[in-house]
Amino acid sequence: MQIKGNNIQQARLTIRVSRNTLSFSVVDREAEHQLIYEPYTVKSGVSMAANLRQAFKESTLLQRGYQKVRVYLDSPILLVPIEEFHEEDIDVLYQHAFNSHNSDAILYRVQPGTECGSGIPYQQGFEDGGRRQL
Image (tube, rainbow, N blue to C red; front, side):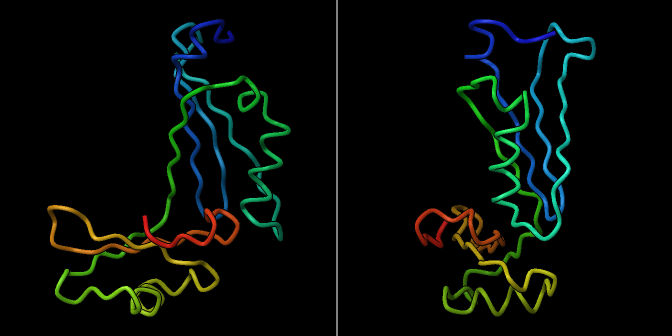
């Protein structure tokens, strides 16, 4: 079943982005299993941002007009004690800890209340105007 009228306004679409997969889901109380799940087959050799743009053109779930979206990035997170956290070193530290993210840029943030900084990779093309801080 499809979500109708105001239910689309209230429903929250979930987009999961990982290194090689994309998937979309939404809770639908009228659906048989109360969840609509749509995996998307990514095209190899194409950036994840380009795959996501293409998914918005092809996916019926993404074309429904949801007003709320939750995006999950499935990537390893590097935690660094605040005493050792320096913005200029985060790329080197991340690449040393997780060597499979060589072409990714690293976003960083000092986590409030935890006394540590974190770094998370993102693929070029997802950035918002070169901003590196979360």
